[in-house]
Length: 134
Image (tube, rainbow, N blue to C red; front, side, top):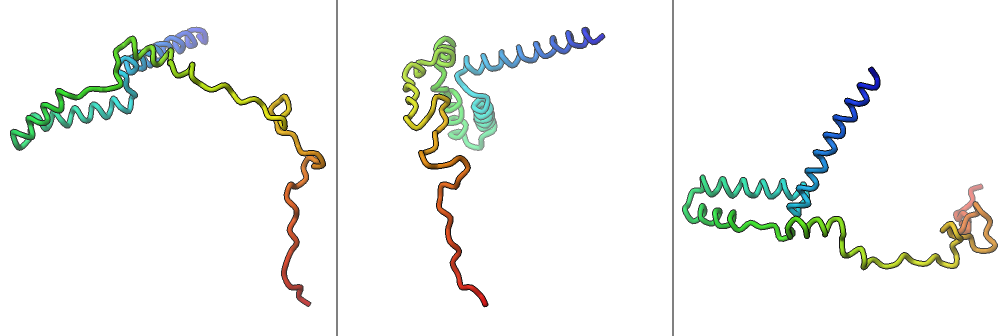
């Protein structure tokens, strides 16, 4: 019984993850993020509403022209979008990591200056100022 439950659970999770992967491949195809998809859909919906139910003819015509001219400038087509996501060209231009400084040991931890004991305060203690009461 336990084995059957695990197999069913894995199958359901596999289907869900496959759908999740397809959704993200679609986002890459469109050259957008999920937030942008929601905003584009809201804008299109508004423009369609104005085009159909606008009060003046000029307003309806302007909405129709705007709706027809909407274009995502980041969508470069399926293959270029895929290339940009999976083989990003800017990765070749990343700077080299900085060399460790002389004060760092091999583990990358900064070493204490000579004369300082571990756990000692690095700032001198302030003397209490004020008048003594008798």
